[in-house]
Image (cartoon, rainbow, N blue to C red):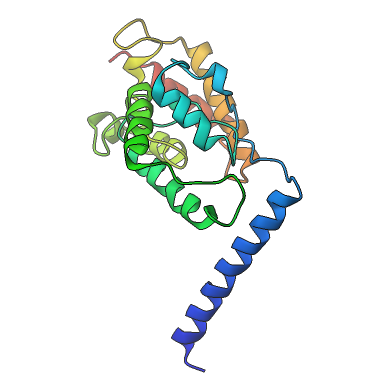
Length: 199
């Protein structure tokens, strides 16, 4: 058999299996996907805003709500579109799953971008420093590398080494749960040292 045709047939079968299997899973009340540190509709920032309500309404049907601070302002549009690709597969197959209208999508993305953190540009000078590569290696596996100057409030006093250690340890625990390479103690120290440098 033509290998290209065989590959296409395999992909088609996998998609069909996924769609059917997902419908069965929902029918059998399989629990939603739990996102580390997931929020509820009431605990979202600016929870009463239109964007937050739409975000909670559509996105909580499949998984717990990610914090809008989980991704950078520049990443959210791409992340959201990727999730919409999954929704397209489920809409019409799984009860209760539907696509948001275009104006609702814009409202949700606008909300997420407003609440997201400020990430460093891909070629930011900070990332050319000796420890910059290690920071990018670990952090960018899940999200953009955050600009340390914005914490705890944009342009205000920076977090202490102890506070950054708690954050990096929490991120490392998420990596372990996801089956990713975890940071060693030396990696952890390098990353924290990078984050607490005076800018």
